[in-house]
Length: 251
Image 1: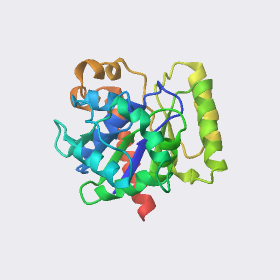
Image 2: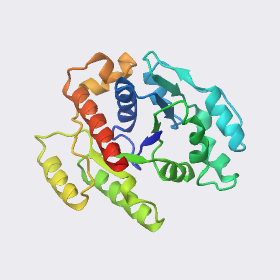
Image 3: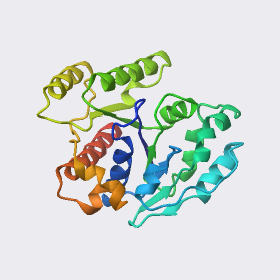
C-alpha cells in the first residue's frame, strides 16, 4: 500500500483538484483507492457527491481509526472509496496533541487499511500544523502543486527548509507545476529557475483550465466528464509518472 498526499503550505494552488483527479486516475489504473479528505472544508468529498463525515471521538488511536473506518463511503466509480471530512476536523491537531507519539499517529492508523487498498490519497489542509507533520511522516510521496509565481516559489522554499530542519526525508517531496500558463513569460522564467534549483520536480505540468473550475458544477472529477481536455490528459499523465516513479523505487 502506498500513501500519497496532496499538500501545499499555500491554498489555491490546485491541491484538491489534484487529489480528486489523481484518486480517480489510480482507480482507473486498477488500484484499489481510498481518498481521505483531511481538509475541514470538505471540498474533495463534495466533488464526489459525498456528504460530510459523521462526528466521532478522536481521543486515541483506536477511536481515530474506528471513526475513519466507519465514515468510509463508496463513490460512484468502481474501486474508489472516500472518507469525507467535516468542520470537526479543525480539531484534528488538538486530538493528535493529546496522544502518545503524536507526530506518528496517522501512519499507525492508515497501516490498518493496507489489506483493503493499494493506494491512499490524502487531501491535506494548507499550512504547517501537527496534522501536517503526521502527513509528512505517513506519506510515501508528498505531491506539492506549485504555481510558477513568486509566492508559490516562496512556500516551496519554506517547505524544503522545514524538512531539512526537522530531518525529514527530502526525497518524499515531489513538486510539480500547477495552473501553468505557457504564454506567460513569468511562468516560463520561474519554471526554468525552479527546475534548476529542485531537480526532483516532476516532468508533468497541469495547465490552467476552465474545465477544472467546472468540477464544482459537475461534482465529479475532471477525468470523468472531460477526458479529452488538456488538463484531464495532464492528470492522467501525472498518475502514470507517479506509478513509474514508485516502481523504480521498488526496483
